[in-house]
Length: 448
Image (cartoon, rainbow, N blue to C red; front, side, top):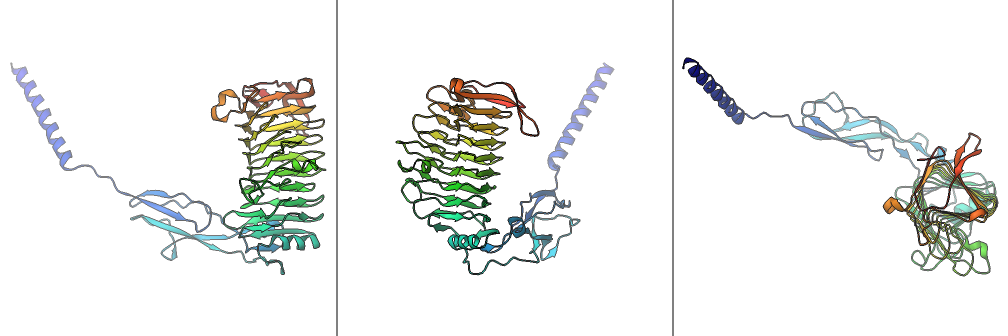
């Protein structure tokens, strides 16, 4: 009895204590210090992430942002690297004074970057009005050398802008993307042997198509290259459909870019889109890019997308006799063959035509056969890395009406192998690739 009484007293004490503590917690809830957002306004520089700081805490000083300086619109006798320099970052300012990052945060604040412009600002070439592409071409062709053309407005130009031997011209857009548009049918830029055209950021070349600029299809490709063409990140070649002339077959190939006669095209970035090579009564092909007859195309990054081609194939890229296409990265995606032909993504057609796939992806293209890649007429395809999506890849799948969605080979008249390349670019085959609708995913020469 005495033990039961002691147990009752102990239990009552615990219950009473719990009730007292619970009531105390209810009447005096725990509080947490508020947090405040510190925002960084880079004033035209690179983005700096905001920080959430507890009241009384300190913001962490971020890495310095960067800000590129682009001079006023005009033609400059400089290489791109010399023309474009950076502002100098001074520091983060608050309330008109440089901010001390040891200051406790007691409210939300915005810190603003302060910059100093370059000490030497280049002067444009006199006698060439801003955004006057024709006048700029006249000057550089008369005075061969290295030039940069900065544009801050769209421009319409007449066809036949020829870049002469000995000229290297870089075109740069200032601010938002600037467009150079064709005012009538014809080639926009003709890059001759020993000449170079570099399309840099914020510049897009726009051709002519029945659904776009001009309301009618063009008769040729937008850029024809027998010298050197380079595309960098932020550039574009778009909206040109080459319907061609049945009596002038070579003009039909390459809706966006036509590379031949030893010309070179290097794509570091940018987008080639909504171009076409669509003459249904004669040979055509290479809606995005056509490369042939000693030409070469090297793709490191960027996208070739939503282009079309008819007879001749290669709605993304057509690699024709005696040419080479090396793909190291980027994407060939969403291109389509509109007639009875092959190679929705890439067509390799003819003796001496070689496609080397070192990386990148080929996805969501469509053709009657070879929705991803078609190799015919003694063309050669070597693959060391990369992916060509097949039937099971969902929206990324290449498609084909004849169930040859990924890779189509023309029996003995085509070669397709997986393997490795050495430092000198020599290919060592490790196995054959066959006609298939299944995804081809190769890593260091081996199926994954």
